[in-house]
Image (cartoon, rainbow, N blue to C red; front, side):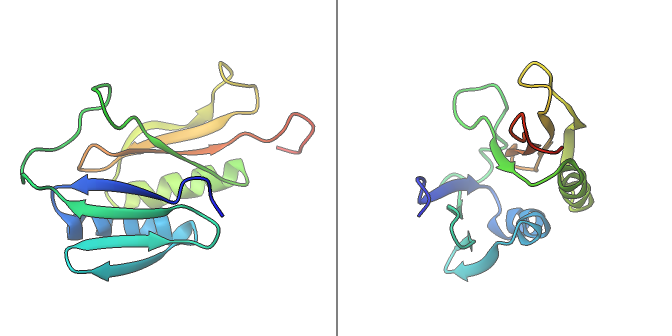
Length: 135
């Protein structure tokens, strides 16, 4: 059971946000479900991700660096997987924030990319193996 049961995000346009997230979340093993005005994504053993419509349409997008959402990081099995997911996201209309690269300020093994959707929601794909593991 994951420590975080679910993560709920408010978006201006649920269908548009869901279509932008769909290729990425499917590639990560999530399954989409639609109910009333929300869309939710589930993956065995992982936190559920839920999209809700904004109560005040047109109030987005979120601006990175302001109080609120920073980013959500998906830990993946390899650098190649970071590269693959980055390309899937960019192909689905995400804006690249930082292309895949190493982040030695974290560790010499930390490899990641960052993308942002039309709602200002930023996600990271990251690979940071233990020091004694293969890269």
